[in-house]
Image (tube, helix red, strand yellow):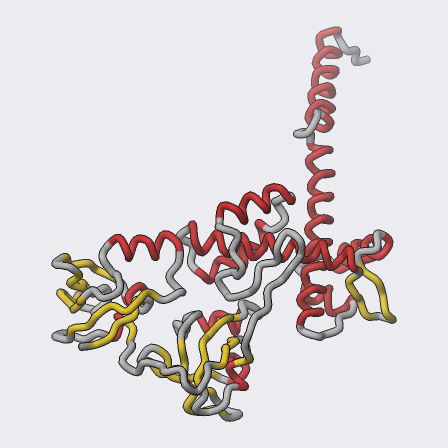
Length: 340
């Protein structure tokens, strides 16, 4: 018959004590970590549901539970469970099978939209992340700030009214500025416009716009618009888009007497032996990147020419105020020039 010595009993006691400690110790115990993660997941789902309902509401579309479960990246049963809790807490209400925001739900949604767009502004102004990453990173970060931290972030950014895509950033009181303009796909031939907003969803269309190197703030002239394509000129370049892609670009119509200077190009189009003057930097160039170019001498009125070409012509070295400065084409495309 096996018997346990006092030492064995002590070791068993210590073993189970350690397990119980690891499970239930304050804050970092496995039980509390799992419990807090479940709460975090529920909070994330609630906020994602509210944000989706807000965007559907703004676009004039109705949405039901099936639509939400298809859009959100969560387990369907979790989404349904959370929606039921949101209805009990009067964040949403049902009109038949259609989900609607209550006033409280809309206020909460605006807070999440505010945090998301502030994070996108931060990523654009203060970091080196590519614009393709802004939206996805902001999606992860938007659930992390409380009201005071959000206001602090806004203050650090100068309380901006718009995010890098041209979307209005709600104020801490829920006031949302208006975005002027119409879809580029609706702009008539020979109309003049200025790009004020580029929609970053759906992702597949946004990436097509990025690939075309289209910039917010660019003045454009439409030369063709039909069911097959929309063709326009901006900053000395021709752009061709499918109407479904052009519909994700908002353009403010310019008056007839506004003159778009035809002799305005992107620095990336400058050729050897050509001389130009810098007329500005595109709004597409922001934050530290913009300040760096200004510090290097790329200021309005400065004469510029090509100094050296790499074998692949990217990057190119430009002669600015007696100094040779290398820029890649995507950087040079954000500097506007007039050829002399």
